[in-house]
Image 1 (cartoon, rainbow, N blue to C red):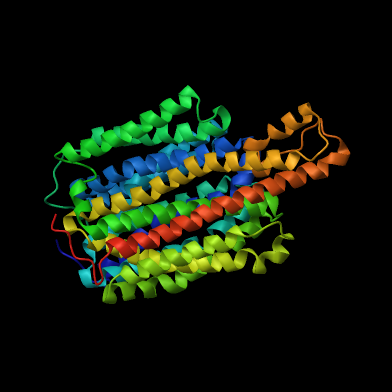
Image 2 (cartoon, rainbow, N blue to C red):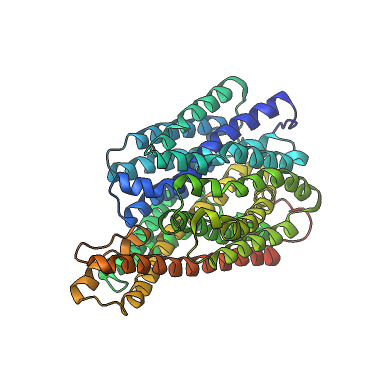
Length: 515
């Protein structure tokens, strides 16, 4: 397959189109976390509703992204990339007009389907079109520029959220997507794998969608129904069985969307394990940090958005340089240091208690954000390079799809498992906090009924004015205790990612898989 130089006219247009399209997904993800409090208030949503707004997108993305990568290899990477961008734009615009949380969840699922076709296309075009000796640099450039474009995502989202304009976060995607489509249509050539077959693994797609959906549904119902509820147990068991069935289908299929033989390469297996652990930790940390800042520490959504700017700046300054180092010396050492540093950042953040708000930012949240931002900046480009160089070129779309699917499955894991754990930890701490207070059983019941809302919990009407301040304090203390446990788990996941690199990735540049 013919490749081009990164600095050539064709190489530059490939990079521009990939960066513009990828920026939509990054802006959508980073800005949405910051405005969840506004969204919750504007649509009268419960905390489980918020998790479904996040999960509807991630479920479709994680389940279909493998097919997206395979379709690109088979039918043309540019063609499927453009189709994904179009569907993503339509889903984004629909989200902006959603009349209630139910419709927002539906439109987020459409967004996810578009993203499943779009996201693997960007890296697949780069890895299959750019000359091999420049791919690490190209991926580092992609990482740096998408970060530059999206660095203002949280700040912009926070400003829009404070102004009651959270819907405009979805509308931002429309001009970016249209610009990317124009570049692809006019200046980027079609690129496909001539050896790919023409069959699509629909059985695998259906089994993984249903498996992830049931698994997620089961965990999100635990705080409400308990872990011994028959419906919860059925959802969890059925979800696990369907995910096992997915592996069996992939093993037996002549045209699997996730070829299991790719995992024979230790680098490919190790990088995907690293991706799962690190992105599960990152997703939990970012989500609960945003909620902590706005709902407990008294930050405005704009201030919370700006607080993540150091993370974006570090990604911009470090990612491209690290990509060059990975090209020259191999990714292993970087993939040990990066996740371990990110884990250290999460651990530092876990010790934050009640603060005086934004005035305490530099001595509370900033050191941890600086550490995990540095760790992620060290990790992202070498991780992508290791994945894409561990397989042969005609599997580039599939490899990109698998790795992106793993990172999104990690997000589903975060929202389902951590969402359930967070409510359980919060409820347990709230019971301990309320026991010393002079409340009657009806009042205690009313206070505990607010537990599923965590940081957005309201003081019940049957509480006397003299006790209202104490109840607010118990809510805040309970959230901070829960947050501390969640961030420590996130830290452990970061360290586990570093361990995966140490065990599975061999020194030197990752060899190509013969598959």
